Length: 523
Image (cartoon, rainbow, N blue to C red):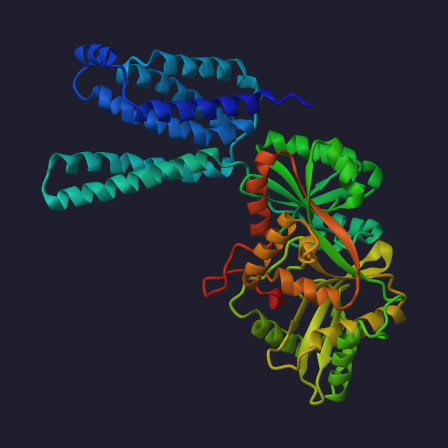
């Protein structure tokens, strides 16, 4: 078992000291000590020190996360807060024991000062100066109003205090924010696209080309990984792309640099083949779900089990629907306009979903493929967007959309016809939607009680996340299931890493007019 790093131990120590500080501030002091303090210090100081100790305890706990991530600014602030806490506990009632704990923590912080090397975000300097300037203006105004005790002045004073508190919190947040990632250059995007074409055998590889992802390349330039930083978590999308022999070294170097910047690393959509390398680097892994994969050469509409799909295909064909499969580059402006209308109608007020297995644009990638369903009148009823897996002769489904007034079974018809096209063009596999927690959705009365409980929770959340509906749709085609995993460094990282993943997939944004994500067809 690996020994925890010193910053992590100090973070736990800081958390314990903060809790101890809060408990001490909320419990009575020894009477003889209080009498001694009140006989020496001016009136009101012990009570003020108690309130200050409570606030400093909360602040110390808050800073512990930054200490665990080796943030230099968190260390600087922690030193000030811990030193002030030691003094406050003496001033509130000669609480020697708690002060001694804080002094021990202060010594530990000082002796380990060289371990806290993660810089702050240089981009925060300007807004931080603006916030501090606002505080410099607001605090004297609040003091002036505090002199007058009429009702109107008291209300203004309260409002000013709330404003000062908000500005103070904003200043702390800016001070502790980790470095942001600069824009990805055109040269990096071109190199990433070349590596996807050369080594993109994984069904998630092409999605690395989304414009909201940054890239980290190996020293040789023969492999890279796509990631996005959210709330201090560097969220990697899928496995590294390129020379598999470089995978371990690439991830190790990325992890080192991420830690130097105060980030924690998580991997969404990791494959089973890469888990050994991730485990060797200290990553924990958790089952995330199954990717549904159809092999066109094996797919058939024959048999009773798939009769519902067969009936949908027959019904749509009798209604006059046909499917046209074409390269995105061959779509003319008339067709693009129709696809935009279909997309807007389908999307409504919902945000654009996807990060690991979706594209951020419909027309910006010329080597993608569109499968378009057209009715007897020539109107577009729905479409699929497919992205290639160049190194494996496969395709992955990026999006599927339809008009609300189209017949039931249109998507089944579209996928079936697309599989036929794939078979005719020697496509090895067609990856459908990703089924989150598919193992749980397959649970029945014979499975463990815990598994059934998770399934019950997923069914209750289906209206927002559509987990069950997507899984049921995928099962209609009797696909092969490819397991995917979510990897993270420590179990204490899991809550924030999980939130970062949900945020990246736009699963935390409820539908409504406030949704600001860019429409897929905008480019």
